[in-house]
Image 1 (cartoon, one colour):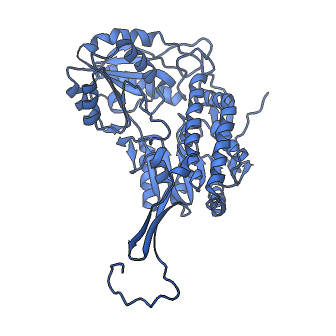
Image 2 (cartoon, helix red, strand yellow):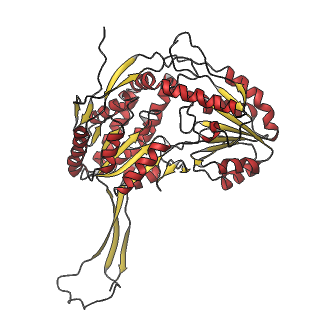
Image 3 (cartoon, rainbow, N blue to C red):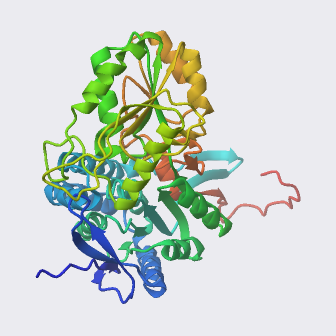
Length: 500
């Protein structure tokens, strides 16, 4: 009988066997096999990680920018070389298909490449003779010990939205990934050490609410980034902010796709299928609501037929279009939300409940599900489903579609399909959503642009990645200087606030 591996912590450059008495089983969503046990770190272990990061910051902040860049360059190369291993770990613990997991690794490489360019952005300003003989300039400095708390759905991409930019700017970091998919982020951190990141600059702990609360409360932690559910993210933001920390929380979503009757029909439908049902809908940027305008509603049978033909399979089936949900709890919740839609009057055009996958009979599978005639007061519309469920609404005009989208409290992403440039321009101007796609199904920006979800999908004024990410992990210090020659006459008394 094979023993179940126990996941270590990473503190001060060392893999540490936790002394905890609480462990979480990591379960393969396709087979229900326990593939690892992850420790719920003790208070002392979380505090040790913070202390290690504080100690490392003292020297890392003074490392040359070129030194920090070379570490990031080496790390992105190591991640590229370990793509297959990282993808297998993600797929086994999360449940997404291996090709989807490989795509996540690719996104991580992009984020690491952007971290290599921090030097050209982390720049101050200089004004010579801002007043007579006085120069004013700014420097952009790291904050200190920073922390990141990530959800399970993108085990390494979410982490790469945080720590590479933070450490490239000169900070040290404590990462708390989800205990549901711990192996890939731990491997990523080990690769960072191999790339030359000094011990203590990046630490990894696992835990639940207690660990998050320590990170929020500890006086040595200066900033926290969170990506996950609205409920948890709101608590994190409130607690961290009350403790005087800089905080950003990327929260839940309800992303709409508006399809105009002039759109390229086949392209719009194919993109909708991938955006709605890929990764079994477990994406904060998944398209969960289709708003069909005018005669585009006549395309619904083609959309249903395409969804019905999608292949559901185990996470290691490279030919599958979508794999299982991450847990039995998620399965029960998604099925409950589908039923709530039916009970409240939606028309169930395609029911993915009860789907059977012969190669994985115990998997947490829900197939593509389409609910038509959904209204804004239904629970399946109001809540983030986080499963392969598409709600369909039909309207007569673009203005009505915009009104529906803007009335929803969330603001992560929205897309529109049209061949009319005037329609696209009107849409981008009038829509009140942080990220807009025009003929693009999932408008997640490239790594050198910031993730700019808005309204109910975000707390904090700065997004992750891009220039905003660098601003979040740094602080600006302004210097006002005057240098007089030794032989200069003494300055006259100045009792005003004017610079003379």
